[in-house]
Image 1 (spheres, rainbow, N blue to C red):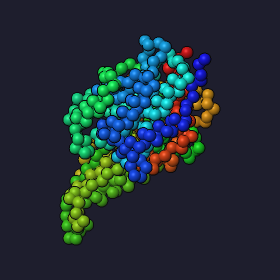
Image 2: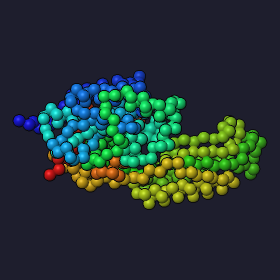
Image 3: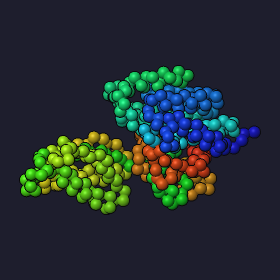
Image 4: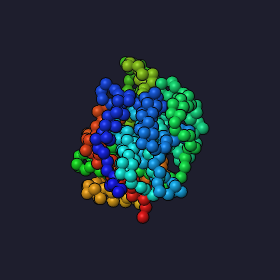
Length: 414
């Protein structure tokens, strides 16, 4: 008799603890950066767990790791479920790992119940989602969906390591995994992830059903003035780029987000040259991270940033130069896949809310080649990319239960 597949919460939480010990930091987080020794150890553990259950394992040329459970119809493309295992240098134990290990638990639950799905289901651990050691991030999903990776061969990491060398070593460290070409037809993709924001926790909502990922654009602003002595240069003679930069940032912070609740504007880095305490800077540079779900609004916000920076620079007799360094269009997820997840939530009698993701994830790229959607669970105080990142055990198990039900429905269409 076939049993009803059920998530084994104790097993899932134990796996989260086990993986958190790989690259553990003294403050309770993890340092498991992409293609590192720690990353290889996590991949090794997941592969060994998969082989113990009789699942087939594969990896591709960018070190995406796949764990396959066969379906009743071998001609159907697989459904992918998963996330990533790499972390920030001082990252949390749930970012990525929760989605990957919940996906593996879903496979185990199906195996425990001897349940059959029509399509195969594959757990995927995407390579280098974070991009903290080797930029850009989301390398694995970008390569999977056909990105040109030729330039990546020359990338050097933040620690001086060669990406090509570390990638080769990572693939070689798992010889049990059969090598497959990067990219293949899939029937869909579902990713479970922590929200990385406070709204679900604040609203006491156990599940967020993600309908889209907002677009992201990075700008590098440089304002040029004239270096001068701090004590001898009067106001009338100053061409001070720091004054212009501060004025521009202040104007943008008081208009962009207050007037558009869907907009995000962040100045994350600022530097002055020559950087002397007693000298007017020659130049000031800063970065601007822009995000919005609507591409036309993102264009309008960028135009406003350019206009404001130019105006404030001119007011100080300086010049402003702005370069776009990164542009990642957003994506709307498949309505059909969103409905599958919402039906799974309803079948478990759980409340939920629809959400737009403010962060980009591997699902953003997979949505361009197959039906995809995401499930969010709350994290304490919205903290992520932080060693204090925490997900209540009950919420972790609930997310895995939704993922299991959604995966069964998506892999066995009526």
